[in-house]
Length: 231
Image 1 (cartoon, rainbow, N blue to C red):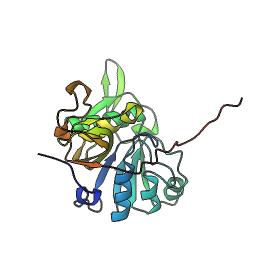
Image 2 (cartoon, rainbow, N blue to C red; image 1 turned 135 degrees about the horizontal axis):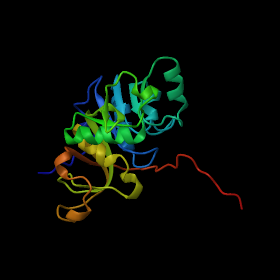
Image 3 (tube, rainbow, N blue to C red; image 1 turned 120 degrees about the vertical axis):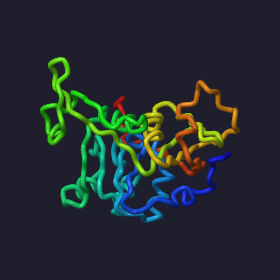
């Protein structure tokens, strides 16, 4: 049974206000840019978005911020987005900063059906405020809750019609974790291959986690920050 959809509008027709999105990518690498643009066009508001960061002002998740569609952001890094700063300081945007490794594990745990886990990261800092703690072998750990989403949006290099996914190099980043943690996972892909073309050993996300596959187009593949060496 094919999971291929002909448009992002079709795949996102069930997206409603005040739902939670888990979005793959790291910076601008491996982001589902076509899916994000489709959500902007759809105009859904009140979204909680869980992602490593929030893109830049005019690209990636930043376009949803600019359109005031995000009300809460759960992220580990927010330093490249002036709109993010303005909305946070004005009280428009709720922000839950989470250490990067903890964020990755919260998403992974959500996909694995693990409700919570303990970590030493953040003990004695504002990250630990209001969270339960426990001693293991004389060391203090804080409890972190798993994260799941109504939708997960991921970007893959290749997919087959059954939803099996392969990511390309560093674009793999948060995508495999995000793919497992959504009630509905939408995979935006660069190339659709026939069933059987992907070798089992090369599949990063099995199709059981994926509900919709859409072939994207017109990828910009921006460089977030270009640094040139003198000489």
